Length: 340
Image (tube, rainbow, N blue to C red; front, side, top):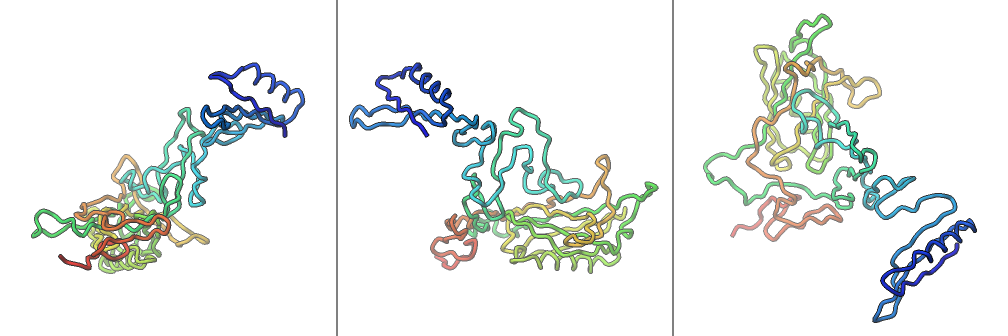
């Protein structure tokens, strides 16, 4: 490795000097670099200004924040800290799941958009793993909860919980004849819940039972409450059948772990055969865009809120644990221990 030191004696450096140095490197076919320096007027110590790379191999030495064969794409900050993937802008999913983008239809994957602008294949950002956040995925996320001191103005009125509505509309057979709810009897589907920490949990298979709604309601409630880590610790479920054989399921989130607005549930209504988990037969549902279709909607907004550490503590981003203020406790600091 060879190096040429060019010291700047004035405001401008002689371009000829740099050109001569590069020419020498090129003719000798030696890898190396040129270091442009200046000297501090007071301390007389050298300051590095520019490092110009020259390589006989023709490979680029990219500036910070860029990478690739021609340095043509953005690098993700800190390589996503080992807790995420570096994704192109056209591959990023809108919101957290499909219902957050569009209510009609059941889709298990998030929504992406065709992207053909000039920065297609160039702009990238981190897509963090569950429980990690920030631009470089370096911070552990802390539990979310309601602020226990945040109440409605009218304390006599009951506080409302979030209610999500699952609307199942039977599809058509091969002759375009309308199916009924009972044509899906005995078939199975599943529900996927995405937590505020971006964790996804999918239930065991649920039997679609339009003959016995109380049993159908019990199966849905049991499947959601059985999700790991008590990620859903309290819900109520109700179901009705409309005059047109459609099934509506209302799920009310009442637990301490699911206070405030939650991501909409994803209905896994596709067939998931041998080798797939959970194994599902799938449902025959209406999927046409130009007609009424099965959907997930928020039927009632929650009076509760959802803040990091319940807004009554400070998140330790190294551990993902809340340090609650004095007088508060719990994973998300939403339990009062002192009354003044």
